[in-house]
Image (cartoon, rainbow, N blue to C red; front, side, top):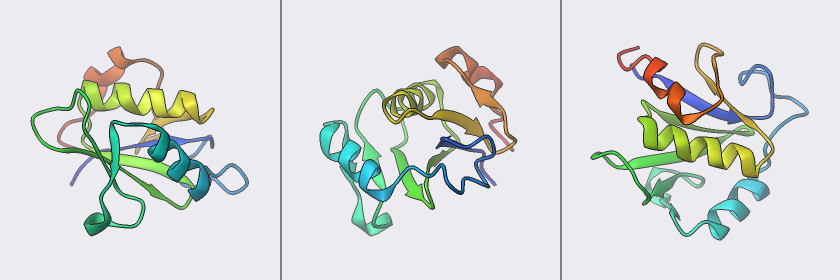
Length: 112
């Protein structure tokens, strides 16, 4: 089982009613960001990140008003923080931990 991080506007990523990142906002960001490419085989809102990614393929997806990825490394967390800043949101872990900066990546449970 993996550990997800969530780009969200909510205090609790699981209850984001009224604070959703809209599908339109997500797709506009993807279109504007040359490092993000839609990946239809993995879902309508899934994207591959071609930036400074880890050795494995890095990805993000949008679901019910949040953007998420699983088992991020420091580079992926940094990209998530950039996405959050663009969308006036923040990054939360599965456990509710708020990630404020890229140096927080060492605290992500890699084998959750």
